[in-house]
Every structure is written in C-alpha cells, then in structure tokens.
Length: 336
Image (tube, rainbow, N blue to C red; front, side, top):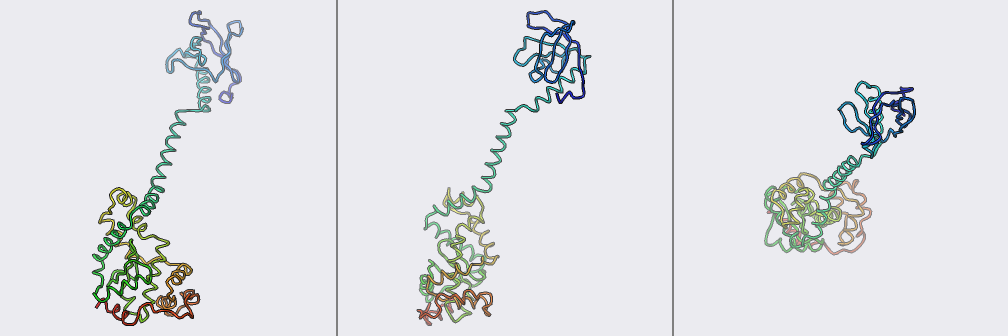
C-alpha cells in the first residue's frame, strides 16, 4: 500500500465483534498491502477486511469504531492510544477516497462547465445571432424608417442636407442610375460618402461641386453599394448598438434615439472601409459607368488606384452620360 510504504509491519490491539449479538473479543490488528487482518490472541485469523472498504462509524470520537463497508454489524474498536494504527488507517482511507469518483463533485463541475458554455454563447454568439435575425426579419418599410430617423440624427451633427426644388428630380435620376433608393447631398459632417439603412446614400457636397464629371459622384455611390454587400448598413447600426439594440428592435420594432445618436457620431468620425478592386469594378460594370474618373478623383496621380484605371469595364465604349450637362450644373448648385 503506497500510503503505508514507510511501515514494514504495523500491529495494534483492539476489540472485535463479529455481529451485534456476539461478544467483543480482544484481537490483534495488522495492516498489509491491501487488507486489514484481525487475529485472536493465539494468532489465529478471525477476519480480513479490504482496506478500500473500511468505514469509520464515529469520526472524531474514541475509541474509534470501524466496520466493513456495507456491514455495520461487524465492528472493530481501536483505542485512542493506538495512534500509529489509527493514523495509518485514516491515511489509507483518505488515499483511497482521493482515487474514487465523486459524483457530486463531477456533477458540480458539469453544471459549472455547462453554465460557462451557455455564458460564452450568450456573450459571443447570441448577439450576432439576434443581429442577423433582426436584419432578416425587419420589414423593408421599417428599415427605410430607421434610415430616415438616422439621417435626422446625422443632420443634428452635420447640419441640414442641401435641397432645392430643381435638384430634387435630378437626385432621384442619379439615384436610379446607380441603384440606390435615395441620394442626399450634405453640406458637412460626412467626409465623402455614407450608406444608411433603407438604401439612403449621403454624399459630401465636394463630390458634386469640385468635379466636372458626374461619374465621380456616381462612383462614390457605387462604392457605397459595394460596401453594403460586405457590411449591411442596418447590421452595422445594430452592431454599434450592442445586443440590446437588436433585442429592442425585435421586440418593439423601434431603436432608441441614444442608439441612433451614438452610431451617427461614431460613423462620421471614421473613414469608410477600403474595397477590393474587383468588388468595386463589378458595380461599375453593372451600372455601365466608367471607373476611371472616380479613380483619379481618389488619387490625382492614379498610382494608388491603377487597378480601377487599367481594368475600367467601360474603357473604349460609347457611353450614355451619367447626367446631361444641364442637370449636372443644377446639381452642382444644390447647396447654393
């Protein structure tokens, strides 16, 4: 027995009783590798107990009372002064107990592990699941309303959008040509362009005032369409608002004004995500609009936008103008 390796032979005196009706007898107790042997005073064996099955009936009380596991009628009393034997038996019992399965402990660990797993799901998986579900189930009319509400909160920060009666149908024409629902020209706040839920694209006034070719403004709109295929605008808004924003939208159909304000302030402060050339070129090809004017607007040298220039899907083709000259001039004056 590993727990008793330090002892060559260990014996002690005790009182043994074979059953509750039997008389107690003086005995000699000896501990072997795996058994506790009980002999009478003439060294005749009376019983062998497996050390793995020895149970103490009165922990902390003396004389110590032991019995085989499952048979409390057969008992062995060991007096308090037999300290070496008592310590040896307790050491063996503790060593064996450590090797046994502990269903209660295992159950506790299992429950804690399950709770930890559920917690991880709630923290990392549930928010994205709710967000994706909200994006898929929110009606289009509600998405449009959210976009309009967000535009109103952005105007609180950037100032009123530019608008004239003459330019309104021209904006609608440019929006239809580029495949978005609504086009808005902003005086300030928006650095270049921004796509809101509901198919609303915001453009900074410089994209219409500083360029002679309307293909530049069209290119900025197409870039936002391409970004929307990678980062759905409503999903971005819900991600910024956290799990509660998705939960509130699913349960009430509304978003808090604080959520819209926080998103509008953050999205205006950061540059728009970069786009792969092939993704952007596909949008130009779909709309039959040349990518070269937009590429040179991004980089006048063309060095960093060479892919958009060399792979222009409309290069060498006879194209219908994005807008006629009269409409473009009207649009350039939209902000006064």
